[in-house]
Image (cartoon, rainbow, N blue to C red):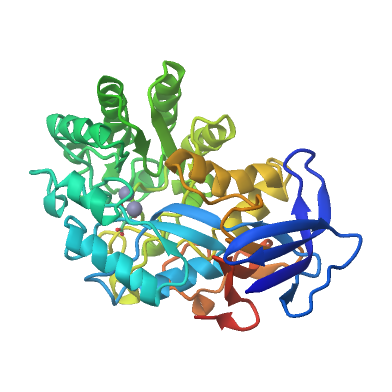
Length: 434
Ligand code: DOR
Ligand code: ZN
Ligand code: ZN
């Protein structure tokens, strides 16, 4: 099967210039690039006219929640991967806090089998560090690796016991696998819903302190230094965490980290007084100073990659109010337009910088063969419309979740077409193609 995508705008990673090019896909791989001067012979090929839209490697999201098995009312592997495709993501890594928790080879197989039959993008699952994510007993890392897990994490909760984390790291290192950590010390959090900061003070709420994150970050960087494991920190949200990661990297610790669009764009001062739980996520929105530190962290490479932490919940759950609603917001269908509009169009970042943080950098950090448009690479490609402004409309989402704080935001940079393994899986005109 041969496909030609013609008239695609490409960003030269060397010069930063835009050039029109044509690309031939064959057998799921990128087969050939041609310069835009002459149209290739496209007889007998599937033809896609990009009409000057930007072509990019599909985005890679190393932190998502697909909710299946167990919470299918929030999301399924089908709906979650459809949402990912619409957001321009071609590779996603779901977290194991499902029901049952993905802590056995059987659950990993189940997720991989469902992804193969019902999913539309690549799904690379993580497995839990501890059984049922309870922090008491390690899972069978070797068997989980064998089953196809790409790393170990108890995301949703922190591993509270330092010896347990050290044992996990030692075992992961022996298997050449990464540990991915949700950093949160439970003893400092106790039931709070928002960050310690202006919003909590104004409303007389107990706040989640910044140290609850940074204490685990610091502890685990030391444990990573001791064990030599690749240690990856989830959703960095505080200035202290950025400072500690910078220090760890400066002395050669194998630490990498990620940040979410909402922690780069929103502080607790943006939370509306209505106490809308669509502004509740974990880690919470922190202070403006923390937001700026996270931006500087991604800019100087202290933070390596951008992820969404796509965390769908039902409308009923999110209607329970700030104190009782679950933590989390959806992310796939707004991530790139948000960052493109707020950081690239404003001139703070180059387009190349943003694309790298969502494509080649996650591939490098996790050793994946994606995130590249080189000849011979898997044909995971997207087209993006950089010109047209549109409003965020949760009613049009493909995710089952409607939980976003970005409703009504006017954004540029909307994905228009998504190709996975050489196959068009989603287009703006026709939606999902299975
Ligand atoms: O906001 C969050 N939602 N943070 C987490 O750590 C877990 C996630 C979820 O599973 O909903
Ligand atoms: Zn988390
Ligand atoms: Zn998460």
